[in-house]
Amino acid sequence: MSRRSSLQASQPTPSSTPLTTRVIRLGVALLENLDQQRYAKRARCSTVLADEPDNLDSNSPIYDSILASQGAEGIVITTNFSPSEFNLIWTEVRQYIFRQWNVGSGRKSAVSARDLLLMLFTSLKDCVSVVLNGFAINCKKFYKGSVSDKTIFHENINSHLASLAKRTGETTLEDSEPGMEQWAVLADKGYQGIQHNVRAVLPLKKPIGGILTFAEQAKNDRIASDRVIVENYFGRLKTLWATCSDTYRWSRKSYDIVFQACLALTNVHVRLHPLRAEDGDSNAQYINRLNAIGAKIIKTKRAAGKAYRSKRKVRLSMVLASENTFTRDLPGSDAELGFDNEDGNSSFIM
Image (cartoon, rainbow, N blue to C red; front, side, top):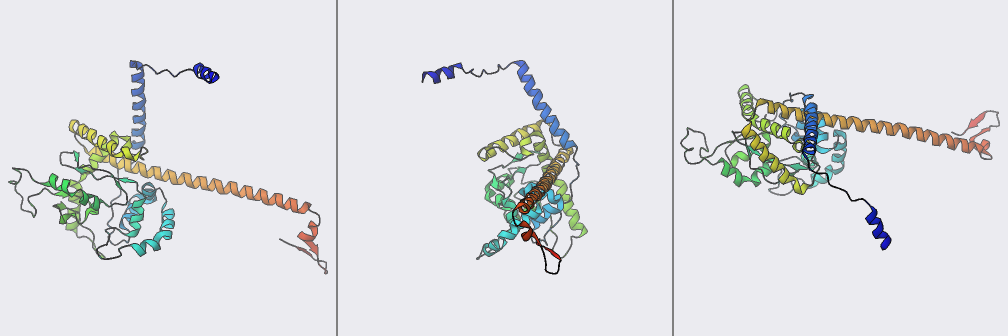
């Protein structure tokens, strides 16, 4: 007991670094350096995103949309599996899912079975509304990736109804469209069906076996132009906070408070510095950077697999060579490996 106490007493106790002006400056300089590195990586990416295709004819519109717009890297980023690996998993579970899918009255799902498997690999999802002045509102708890955007919207319908209701004096504004007692919400194609509960402006989907007319496509373009403020906001959010533009590595229990704090601080930043088109370009660059990260992961995995196969081939050849040498050294190995036939020809056992 006395020896243990003496050993503990002889060990130096860690001393805390005093918080001086120099230490603070060094810490701030380190953070600024990391931030500049992040900006430099983003600046190397293009600001152009591929147009989102309309995949109403597809059996798996969500999967095919990601694959067509972001390539194989998009599937890797979303699920941590390559398309070939995802297809192998789907082959294993397909029969079971089909036996349980849309069984019984009133159980028709809004997504396909294959798309559900895709969303199961997406860990966290948030639904946020962006108002015309550039502020984010109605941020609730996070959901699992298997929950569709439409379902999240309906589960928070009360807050959406309260936000869309016109206040005193706003009802006198000229508005002759149906549902004039509400403001309209602009949503993307993943929210089809919410127009039955709220006043919504949704882009038109391509009919099965058909195409959109010029007027319908022009309408979709106008809706996308009005919704650009959403892209600008999330570009600002990802620019300010690295935790919102990369893989979330902290505890899920703290995700809600971290994400909501980032939204609140981003709202303050937007109030001081209004959104600009450059924020939308930043959002596109971050998306393209994530695609590049996915491509790098695939390349690294392929290189590792190739190196493993090469080393395994060398090991097997060495083992076979040693076994052949050992076999030749055994007594009677000549009779086992080769012999002369009665006609004088030599035969060998391979």
